[in-house]
Image (tube, rainbow, N blue to C red):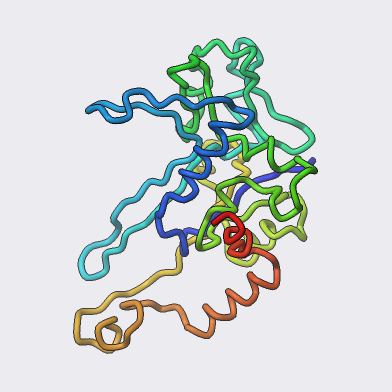
Length: 254
């Protein structure tokens, strides 16, 4: 069975939220309908998002770093949100493996949100319906779009190409090769939900104090990085060759 999914490279995500805003823009006017934003300028704003970026600090000085962690529905191969739905509104499609919501059946009971261990479901307060990432299902199968544009909005918007999209059950796909070559992993595998989305681990870095050979003040580079510049160039060249960089696609939207 085909299983479409995202692979997110945590080593190059810069936390710019381009994926968040592009997702919001596309899905507000797409198949999912208008996504509510209640009291957006008040002290207690509320809104519905399919994709969020969580940022946190790790380590301690001088080896501290900021980690940006994008998270959305993981389109689990054994989704716990589906069997708990009393109306059958939550379902998993066989043709592409996507976990979706039938809004005509959803009663907003929140059972699916309670069952999801990843917090990927959100109640649209305006419509009183549960919403979630669809991987832009109304876009990826649209034959009126060019092949390069048949990808989720978040993938096309990412300025660092930190997001890859494809069939993880196809060993020759971009996402499968990235998982195999770079040790891609699933989020919270102990729940046995078999998340389709994977993450590529960060490359460890070791920071040193100012004035050392590793300091960016002296070298003009990133302090303490253990990444070989030649390796980085090779990675970019390989990404270009495999069609993983989408900067040209982005440029057409500026």
